[in-house]
Length: 120
Image (tube, rainbow, N blue to C red; front, top):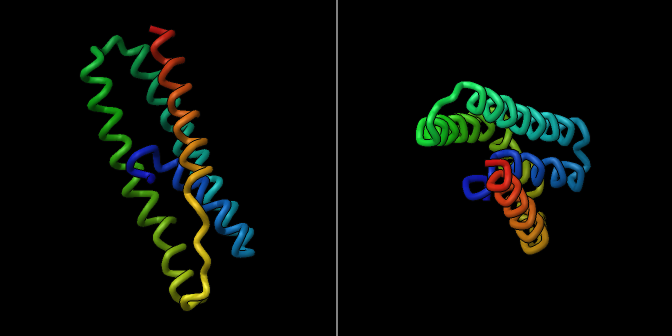
């Protein structure tokens, strides 16, 4: 889902999951990753708007930033959750439904798309 929506979405899901697993320190770390990713996106967007670059250049830069963010987030933070569950839970982990988080993400990203189009 992080590839479809954003690494920030994945970091938030991981933070909530860490809380569910009773790992507050790791949950805080995941929240910080989500914040870092969102701030980086805002800073890049502001820079791109002020740099007077064409839309194609902005889009390519954004895609590159998204790719770098997902690689950094996965190897620095996200992978550890899967390893923790495999090591500590040993098949005792109960997966939750993706329905509500995906619906929230679709509403949020759809709203952001409408907002971005109205600002042009």
